Length: 89
Image (tube, helix red, strand yellow):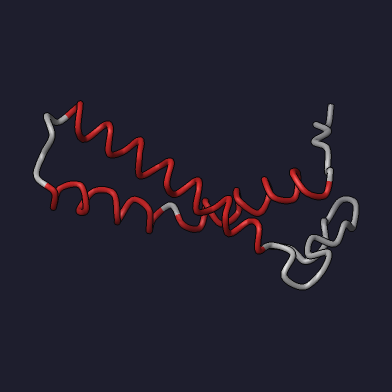
C-alpha cells in the first residue's frame, strides 16, 4: 500500500498503530466469508463431512487474505478519518 495517496498526497497511516481497527474489520470480513461458504456447503452440497468444510473454507480464506487486507484498511480509513469517495467524471 502506498505511504501517500498519489493523487492528493494524503498520508494513509496518520499515527502509529492507526490500522489496529482494520484488524477487526478484517476479522469480521473473514468471518462473513467463512459463514457464507459454510451455508453454501451446508445447503448446496447436502451437509458434507467436517473435513470438507475445512478443506474448502481454509484455502479460500488464505487466497483472499491480500484482498481482505486492502479492503479492511480502506473501510477503516473511510469509517474513522471521514474520507469521502468522489468519483472522477
